[in-house]
Length: 368
Image 1 (cartoon, rainbow, N blue to C red):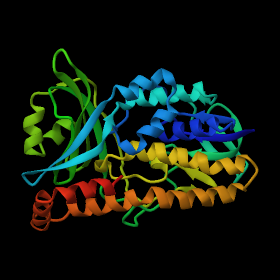
Image 2 (cartoon, rainbow, N blue to C red):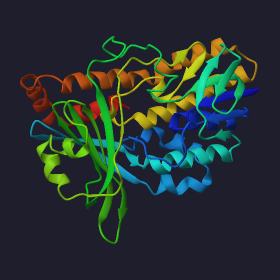
Image 3 (tube, rainbow, N blue to C red):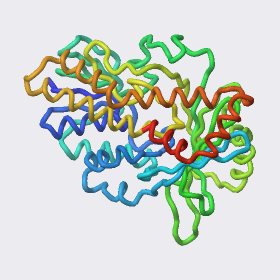
């Protein structure tokens, strides 16, 4: 009988597993894939979670955080204009290929039992739980679901933000790395009808001035299905991408479904995208994953110590999630509605934003 089984080895799952293990819990972490791996991700780690990430990573991986590129500015390319917004304190740019592997190894280093290539097929009970996997069946006092937004454990009839069980519009994510000469230390968001593409440096070569950049897009499937097609949708992006050299094969994911946060289901705590999918352009996905995973584990500590029931711990997590994290989803939904307004309505608002640095900075802070 484990104190906790965490399902999903991404940032949310490893954050939960490490936090619980550091408090003395016996933890099993299950992951259906293998590390290292590429994931569709903007690879933007906001400042709000950098101290937490430093606490989660073992000393062997401290350079991954300390040597990462810092992102000081956001630039939005929309309707022929460029909006600048400061990112203060600066964010970090860390490739998921290395981040996931570092967190996975750090979990092992702090005593978490880990299993890769293990698919969870069924969870039974409401505490204690029986977890049926492709290897065997495990028992746990508590379970955290960190399997992402679209797994057999996370797709259980939760409506999206429009109230539909599945949005009629299919959105997909696609990402790859390229090389570029001397890119700006900014995250650049290129918007177009039916999607956007984010671009930022992830590593640099001081001798050649050439950097590795991440291009990650969210796009309607009827607009584009490849990055080459995405690059043609925005004139500034089309011109910039002409000089890029590919470094990795593209990876994609679909469908992307927006919905209201659902952090608890039948005493199972959900973290990361399993709880809710935040609009990627706000750049807080990794941060929310790390923070929600740690918060879930912290809310379970009184239960592990015998000071509360599992149901009380679940209620505490639901309320804490609402108080500390849910505002990001509300703010990002409002920004999405603004950006999706008809051009004739949107342009005057963009003009106001262009003339008000304080308002642009305020919008950045509201999505953190």
